[in-house]
Length: 298
Image 1 (cartoon, rainbow, N blue to C red):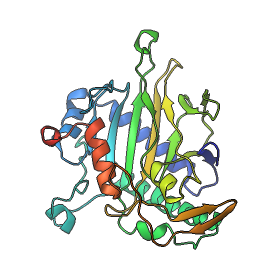
Image 2 (image 1 turned 90 degrees about the vertical axis):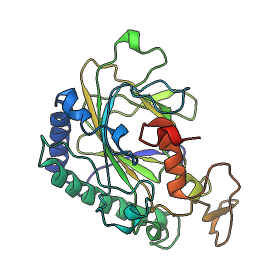
Image 3 (image 1 turned 30 degrees about the vertical axis):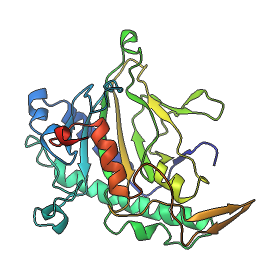
Image 4 (image 1 turned 135 degrees about the vertical axis):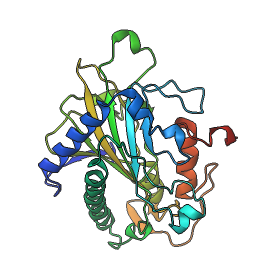
């Protein structure tokens, strides 16, 4: 794997469903700013709800991205044991009262794209001669994230070091991105040049994340990418970030011997970052997004 990005079509999610999600996204971002701020992410401890344009996280090195977004995680009821225990990233989502249909329609879509992602995990395992359930066993209670994102056209004067999304790699297992017909996603090639990933109708752009890179011991890549809306019109995208359960261990399950790949059954990874999925994600989100816990971050 040299790029870490690919397209999938004929994936089983209807074009009608995907179009409906984009319609709901546009409707949400068209709400008055004051209404969207009623469900601002900064009012929660678990990074759910509305993120305004150019919001700054807790890392002073980052400039705010030129986008606004709405974040939906797996829904947890108030009496869920993990919620009662105060486990990070476990909570109920915030929903706009002005769009009562949004919750059910979005959660239905999340269920469909989660099933697609689970099937892809089987294909990935079989493709590298591992048992079909090799990765599935980490996804009994996933903490995946769906985002609606709106990128306004970027004025030339607003491009000095500021992006729709700054260059980064995704931290999860992989991302399934539905994008409209505007364009703006760019991928860093092996030659160091940025290349466009143009929209393809009724497709997903899939990119591999850091967790899959670690699980496969570098066989699969997590490739830097960015978004710049240079096209003079609004851009909407709907990425689904596939993450395993909170306590999933992120360490290599493969070793490489020349051209041969073999499973690793007992190993540890020396790394400064935590090797538990939930710890990795919580640390990342505390850096880039606001929350009620912001003042508690060290």
